[in-house]
Length: 114
Length: 114
Image (cartoon, rainbow over all chains, first blue to last red; front, side, top):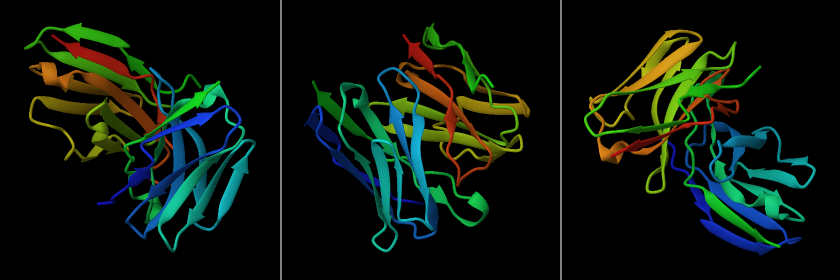
C-alpha cells in the first residue's frame, strides 16, 4: 500500500509568518493530492487539492505545490493567523478511475502564536 | 445538503455493552468510509463501501467490529462487546468515488468505554 509521511509533525510560527508542510508518498500511480484541516474537536475538512496534471494551485493564503517526479507535495500558508492553528493532513490517492482510496498522513500540528 | 450526519455525537458505555454508531452520507455519494481516530494511531480506515457493498474491511480491528450499509443513505458500525481500548473518535466520510476526490467527513462520534 501507499506509504505517506508528513514533515514536520509539529510547526510553531508567529502570526504573519509563512508555514510549509511537506507530504511524501510512495505510489507513483497517485494522481490526486488533497490537504485537510482539522481544528480541535472538529472534523477534518478539505481545504485545497491538486491533480497530477497541475504543478501548483492557489486559493487566497493557501497553496499546494506538487513534484510528481520526487513524489511529494506541499501545503503553503502565507500570512498565518491564529485561526490557522490546527492539524493538517495530506491524503494522496487516485489511480485509474479514482480507484485508490487515500492514505492519510499522521498529521502536522500547526500552532500560530499571536 | 446537510452534509454527512453521524449519531450519536457522544457515547459513554460500560465495557461489554453493545455500541451502534450511525451515519447518513451525502445524497448522491456512492462511497462511504468508517475511520477511527486516536492520538496513538492517527486516522485509521476501518472499512469502506462502494454502492452499498463492503469492499475492504481489512482495517476492522477484530470480530467484535461489524459494519453494514443496507441502503445508499444509511450505514452502521457496531462494536459488540465493547472494550476500553475501543475509546476513540469514529468518523464516517462519503465521496463520489473511492479515490480521486475529496471526502466529506461527518462530525464524528466520540466513544468512551469505561
